[in-house]
Length: 335
Image (cartoon, rainbow, N blue to C red; front, side, top):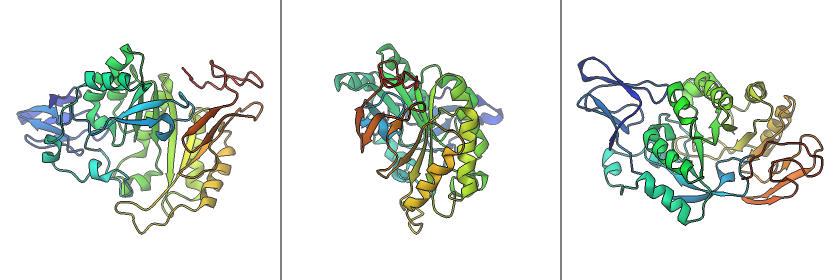
């Protein structure tokens, strides 16, 4: 447990958490929406500091990040808690279905130990992932600072709901981020715990403006965000920020409280790919299927990175991220 960095003290020992855009006002001895940031005697504490549940070696492509350090592996860390309550959450057991006693039972792992573990295993960086990492932002930032000193990269896999204050601090240490742009206003209200999509869009713009490599994921759920207009709205927004931002459309599989919702049809994903192409996006990928995995040069249209599952073959990308066929700079960081 550690005192939080992002909060304000209000009257009567009430505190307001400022880590994310929920800005929870928290009464004494209560937690915020995420249930891992608690008011104790008029101070806000992170209950999950030093409480990572995992040190898992993942391919960077699993985040998914396709245009950043392709073929490398990162150390994935995560705690309990989330500031969304998505009905389709894949990690609901650690994001939503937990109690405070579960947190207390997790062995402590310090930022120093995370970084040392990453180095000893020959991994290239650290990913803050599985649940929304903003809920453990103090733990993440302290780890990021040490990782930077050791020339390890930091990647943020997020719902994009961190506050502007938090993003400004994070961006100092972040190398890349994958942000979920889940759907429209109705989708966020009904399926994500009454969240606001405009904050997510703002985060994408802000991270991109600050020079963080950004990729966007849209999980297509039948009957909820799979209409032509909804898909085009996602693609249009991403293109308005930068046509070089990679956009991942992922296939939905029934999970958690949406077990009766069907799997996304392959044709829906193919249509999404075609719709996104209309907006001039240079890098469009399909997730949870085998199609549309390769990276093509936007200039000469040759495959520069081939993928089969998580196996990556660098076919025609030089060390500066340029196409070996035509010299076009794809802006892909490779080292």
